[in-house]
Image 1: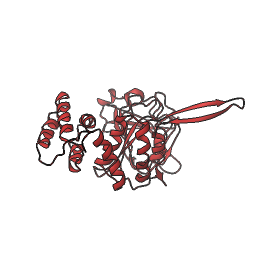
Image 2 (image 1 turned 135 degrees about the horizontal axis):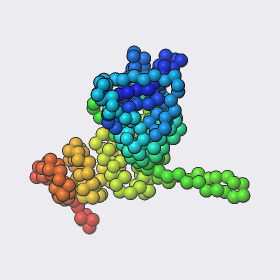
Image 3 (image 1 turned 90 degrees about the horizontal axis):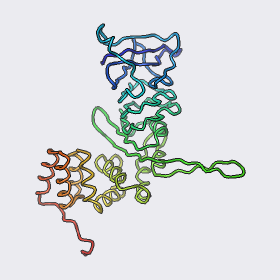
Image 4 (image 1 turned 90 degrees about the vertical axis):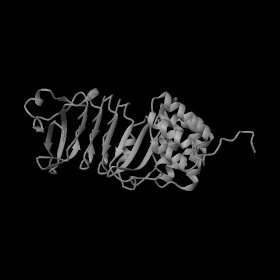
Length: 322
């Protein structure tokens, strides 16, 4: 356990609520208990610049010696970069991460179901949510995603093994005033909003998510489409043959461009999956090798060169070839 100072209080239900945390780095892993009391709630404004701490709150030091006590600082605002909430947390207060502009990732369990308003206001660097559970579990993820309108990747992991990776594109909301009644009409642009509705009783509905891809191909840019397709192909949780074909066709039709983009993932596994299903052509691998060399990804370049020399790769057909 890392060195932390926690400001907390015991609630009427016998669990603990966290009001403030201080430590030595911008990354924090919150424990499940304090003095044998289960932590279940994160208070309003807990990690924002200005906390709301009641007078009867208690302070506790965890693994903190006398010297380190002088170097700790509040983990809040722009100082916070990553946070792991324990499986015991069920409630996340309103504005909990207000103005945490450098927060890049958050890890939660499936017990988190109550999400306050504007939890991630101005947290535009938050692009990764890690779910410490199966994609088959009922979670509060849909409510969490409702507070994140920009693009975000959601990873489901069990015992360190990744089960699913879902990409949720950015979407925009605008309002038009309808005169003279002063009624406002809501406009939503981007398939990211529709993707965030693909849940049944808190459980991810992969089939419904995959259905939006056809329309996304019309509205979203190629990079977003590559991300969505690659994530589903590499981690095919409940992926049907029909939707697999749609994702594969998108990559095959743009395989040179897609292969160059895939290098940015620095993932051997991604290329392994593409090779397994004969998605990338020899020409695409050549483009990926050049890109890997340009980006200094030596391990990837070596693997791709080995892959290109295998005998079972297809050649890219000319558009005039029948």
